[in-house]
Image (tube, rainbow, N blue to C red; front, side, top):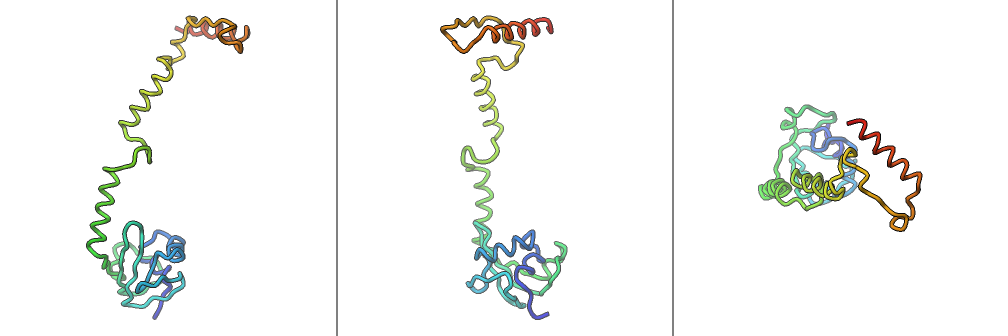
Length: 168
């Protein structure tokens, strides 16, 4: 075997999770050899240095051996050598740390603190009536206050209040 498709090799050495993702990365210009972007069908040889840009880091790999089929994670060092520069690895560490410390407010899943604030806000919005059992007949709207309120609505409300009182 003298040459192997680059997308196949990137997938087989577990640089990308699927071959489709490897192919897409090549098409988007994220995979380069010697500074030149390559197509997914580009053939690679032993000794080639491949740069893979996975924002924010650009990884560099040296081809040690060729293979067509995916191998186990323990066997990957036999086929590639990671020659990524230390400054790129430091950048990766900084991004990992920064992702936890400086998460933009409102982005992603809420933190526990934000969840408590949201719960307090919704509790205040319902004016303390978070459970239906707390409703009583203290609301006495006149027709001029709420012209959309009908006698049928009043009857349903009274039935609901009576039903809740009997449940206690």
